[in-house]
Structure formats: structure tokens, C-alpha cells
Image 1 (tube, helix red, strand yellow):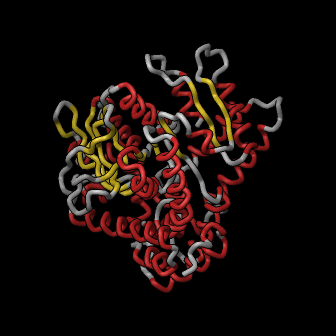
Image 2: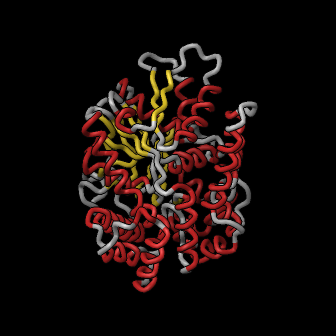
Image 3: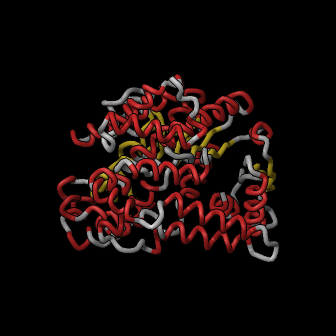
Amino acid sequence: MPLVHGALLGDRGAGRVTRVVLHDVDAGRLLAVSRVLGEQAAGVSDAPEVITTTDLDEALRGADFVFSAIRVGGLEGRANDERVALAEGVLGQETVGAGGIAYGLRTVPVAVDIARRVARLAPDAWVINFTNPAGLVTEAMSHHLGDRVIGICDSPVGLGRRIARVLGAQPDEAWIDYVGLNHLGWVRGLRVAGQDQLPRLLAAPALLGSFEEGRLFGADWLRSLGAIPNEYLHYYYFNREAVRAYQQAERTRGAFLRDQQEIFYAGTADPDVSALELWDRTRAEREATYMSENREAAGAGEREADDLSGGYERVALALMRAIARDERATLILNVRNRGTLSPLDEDAVIEVPCLVDANGAHPVSVDPLPGHAVGLVCAVKAVEREVLAAARSGSRATAVKAFALHPLVDSVSVARRLVDAYTAVHPGLAYLGR
């Protein structure tokens, strides 16, 4: 939220946001974050009014835009997701593989409840979903909100920005041909003044080795694909290496973030400590260590300074402006398919470039995916559908099916053990009783 609030402070145009309501079920966290926002707004005479509440219904009433960013089970839950999966020799990442399924099973019922409340209390509001797994959660909410819920992610934006930078182009002047699901997409082209510059990048080993994805995947593999994958595809293309790196790590990512967050909230309890400075240091450390195990396994080195400055807030503000002011924009978003990707049905949420205006986000027609990508997208979307079905029905058998069908689990026996282990550590999965 501080990144979004900071972006709002710099938005001085007509129709700017004048009121922000923060909601959290934990009053202590609300106080800490409100301190950060208060320090951010110091000296800004027309900063938006910030109100805090632990009552979700109160927060929703009268809202024009709802930013949904929740973590069911907290970071302890994420750490448990990782630990359980790694014990079975499979990936526990929060959006990919077994960990993503477990997180989705916990999160979907809560996200659906929020969507129903929005539909009842703020039927004209637009919901911008930050919650992971973003595509799955956005699709769950869309069953109640239709096209008025839009998922965002900064990964495609960051990837496009890095490619443009390497090619000497201005990111804002480039058309990024990106398509897939959230955390499962590919850049197939980057057009500047109508000319596709991606072939030039793929033909130059030095250029390919000069940015994060080039080092992460390797020049030979990128040339074989003829595209630049989203960084999360490293979990698929180099799964054994990634699992081994996470098993050998001192702490899982969730445990690291849990400990880091505890230090942050404890620090903000001291009135003599600058909450904003503490938050800035915490965020910088989090960004610098992002996917560090993957980079270490690939020998990709440290993240570049330009990639540590965030990105969600720019996408969110551009999306909100485009809708509220009819300032037309092109953004990569998570929206319903509407025939854009032919292998998937109309209501499947995908991640593609969209034209955004006062009527919402409209996916742009894209070229077909190559066969290997179609197979992966369809397999993962089928898993997401099983997760949604399990959340609706409470069926343990359907949850087992979701795990077993995932390409990174690929074992019914492992799937059964995962469901048993996850229901044992997560009270929120008690609904999987049949």
C-alpha cells in the first residue's frame, strides 16, 4: 500500500483520489501502515485523507475502486506451504506448483466472500486484484463481479521494461507482445515504430546475457524458444534445479519474509523510529532477495538497481486513471479471455495486453501460442479450474485431482499426501472434508 499511496501523492491531475480507506483484520498492522502513509504525506497539503477500519463492510461502502491484497494464513501459512511441498520433493512457491495450489485453496473462499460483499455494498466499484495467485483469484472473483475485477502483476511490465532497456528503446514507446496466464507467459515480440526488435535481441548473445531473464534462462534456451519467458517459468524449465536450491536454502522465502515482517512491525511500535524509513529498508531487502535461489542456481547474479523500484503501483495507478478519467492506456492485465486465446474458454482469466478506457479493460487479439506453450497453459488452467471446483464443493477428491494434474507434481500418491499434510497445518482448509 505505501507504494500505491506514494504514487497517489504524485498524481496532481483533475479527478485525483481524495480519500483512502485502509482495511485490515489486525488493528496493529493498520496502525503501523498508517504511520508509514502519514510520514509519506508530510508536507503534501492536498494529500488524500486516510481512514483506517477493521470493518470490511465499512471500508467498502461508497468505494469507487477496491484494491484487494490479502494473505490468508499470513506469512506463516506461506512458510508452511513451502515446507510441506519441499518435504515431498516438489515446489512450494506461493503461485506455482503445490504451494500455489495450497495458497489458492485457502484464498479462493475468502476472495469470493469479498467479491460478494463488493457486489452488494459497492456495485459500481472496480476491483483491482493484487492477491496471489493473481489469475486464479481474479477468475474466482469474476464469477461474482464480471469484468469489474481486473488482476494486475508487475512481472510482465518489468520484463518488457528490461527488454526495451537492453534494446535502447523507451518502454513507454514499445508494444510488448505478451501472452499467457499469470506467472506463465512469454514475450514473443517487442515492437518500436512498428518494427519487431526481438529478433535482434535473440541474435545477440551479449545482449541476451545483459539482463535478468537472459542470465536466468541462458541464451541458447531463449533462442530455442524464440521468445523471452516470464521469470516464473524458471520453475518449469529448470524445476529440478529450483527445487534443489530451495531445499538447500537456510530458510524458505516465506520464512524469511515472515521474520522480516515481524521485525518491521515490532520496529514501528517505537514512536521514535521512522516507520517510513523502516518500511523503505524492509522493502529494499525484500526486492533485492526476490527469487534469489533461482538466480543462484542459474548463476544469474544480483538483481539490477533499476529492477528494485517496484512496479505494481505504476500499473495500478495507470489502470485507475484510464477507467476513472477515460485516459486510454495499454496495459498487460489479468482479464477474462473473451476469445483472445482460442484454446481457452470465454471466462478463463488470462494475462495479455489490454486497451483500457472508462468501460474497463479489453483484451487485444494475439497470435496463437506455439504448441509447447499451449500445452502448458491448458494444463495449468485445468488445475486452476479444479482448485475453484474444490473451493466450491469442499471435495477432498477434487483437491487431490488439482495437485495430481499439475505438471510440477505429476503423482497421485504425492498429491494425496500433500492434501493430508496441508489440511493438517492449515485450519483454513478444514472445509476439504469429503
